Image (cartoon, rainbow over all chains, first blue to last red; front, side, top):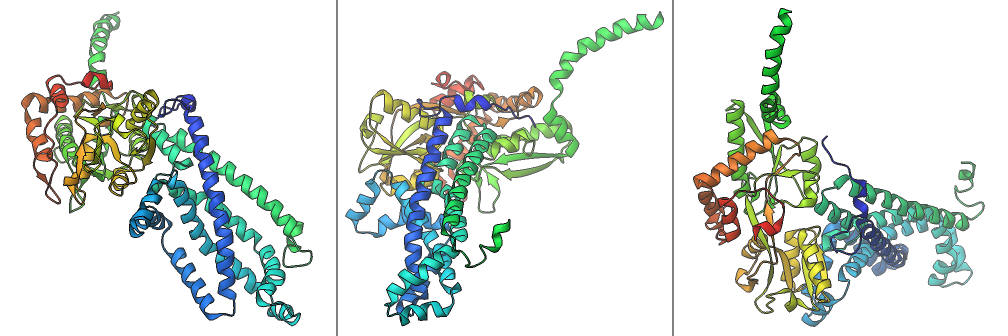
Length: 248
Length: 302
């Protein structure tokens, strides 16, 4: 293959005229991390609410939760991104729509909210699975103690359920980070976007994507290690299969 | 003794023939001859250069120029039944596919610039685009200074980005610059008022405006901010193939055939929807046709 490798390309000035390509890649990494963190925070909170709703013994809450999950889980993320960015402002009242369009960094907010909702649907299933894995006696015991239903969830069910599903949450966080790359569809200049912009102008396609690969890998390794610490501190001695896994 | 006597003139003969032979030799032509197939890379939506018609067949101005090149290759190799295959490429895949030999040339809207010359080479310029500003007639933007403090959109990774950033810093315009990933998205950004101006190659934005819902709502700035020479993208260090391609294109220029091809794609209704680009030949392209060049320096095309 007659490819002209040039690793020094990272130190050449990028299209904005002031920063090097390496700097733009790190800016891209920053936007990726910021989008992933905000989106995952939304997913964690919203997903917990929906997950609880899906297990609650209240008919309309279960139905609402199911509708949320099925809508946001079954529409492709790319399509959702377009709907949030290009369609939502058009169906809102004109003033609200214009306000949304004029918002600085609109791509970032849109991408974070869109990803947040998408992963909230998946997170809801994780939380629901955790709640369903508990024995029915837990809930009955809570209620027998005179706790109300919200109190039972708050003090008895959720603390255990969350601990059980930490590994699943880790994996959701990782896929959320990787899914930020869909943001280029609406012009979010995250890591994949900067790598693409770099290769479009210089044609050093392998160098650009090699750098993006390394940076994604590094970011996800940081998440894996952080979540491993969370897993360790969340473990309940004697509960579930965590103890069996100790010997690894 | 006899052998030596014979060897000397033979050696001179071989030496004399060598440079001529080297010019003839081309890795690309050898590969095409060996496989009995030439592969043309094309784009899927670069109207009217290289795009799909309603039968999913790649057509367009650049494709027609390349068809002439293919004819020349057939003639050169003496293989009139040479198989021609087509492969769609994107902005990201065109480089790897060209350098690894999957495609033999790329016929689209690739700008010939100095940075890219380190990786590939380009044929004689076959189109000269200018970077211009497309805006809505209700909020016209005629120059960069009109966009001061506003949001503009361009296509990520293109020379337009460099140009806008330079103007933004030089004249402290305080622009908010959005990067769309492709033309369709850039046009949508302007259409939905997320940006007041779309800044990109004039022929592309003219096409985007012509195919939009209400073409009469848009206007294009008069003076180009910069010029962009387009060419057929080829592998580096293959002068034999490059001179064949250049010879073919320059032949079209000399015979005046290029005018017919140009009119067919730019001033007449084109398939599949019968849209007319209404884009008469620019003075810059006329200049190239009179004096063909493959230089990446935009200043030479002004």
